[in-house]
Length: 351
Image: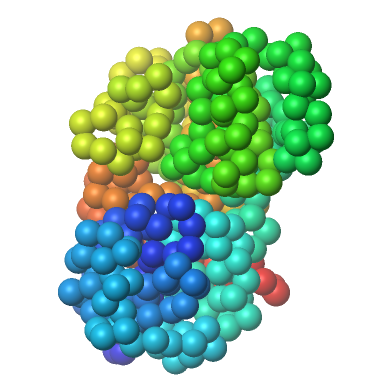
């Protein structure tokens, strides 16, 4: 039988391009060669697509790859993507990759892909809209307020006064459409509030100001099978820093992860999984997703960051939780592809 040509799309235009490179490299390495023909597709910082050889995937950074594209890679058009692959394994993270933009292109081309469709992908990237939807569905979320750049520029003093009346320090400021803790600031006083807002505005046109949560942080991977979402084992996160920073997420030794949880009672872990499934459904996620949040001392479960996809570096939550279910990386990657094919065959219109 002819193997399914799986395009592993990595790199991208977002602040998370290096995370994407690590995810895509690991997916490419672990694809079952007996069932699939893996084809690495690199998106450069201008959004152009390139078929690249393994020698480029193995480079340390997207900059290293970009410098060699003209000599060693083959440029393809968006329209030409369908001539190269039968299925897209999306390993892009952040803007233009997991926010509905690429998903819309793939829908127009008629190519099936991993993860949810255009709308759910867009919701998965917008923390403010996520919280509105989850709250309306009766799911616990942190207290927050969105400050738009024009409001901040027009009345900085009034904005600070309103925020200080609404929240107690410490609190968080973050860009609503970034991941990997990029642009996030732990704010302890009015001076750092100004700094935090300005930092977030480097990445987006608005700032999400959010209450500080003192509890046990968790991450729950949800897989869809037969149309029903199922949680894998829960992971408890204990970062080295005051919060789960970029370095804690990606630098070796900066964070301890317990799968199953060490300090979350079993009955609470099961309640968290049920809440994660509710969030998955409320946002219209398909195929798989990662639902992050906090278990507080008073027993409340708050969902802080639903993700329509997940990082797939070797040490990621995704593979850690899959291992608890007895699945090797190649097995869980194959399952994602097979499930996505079933989902796309059954859709009416775009996913």
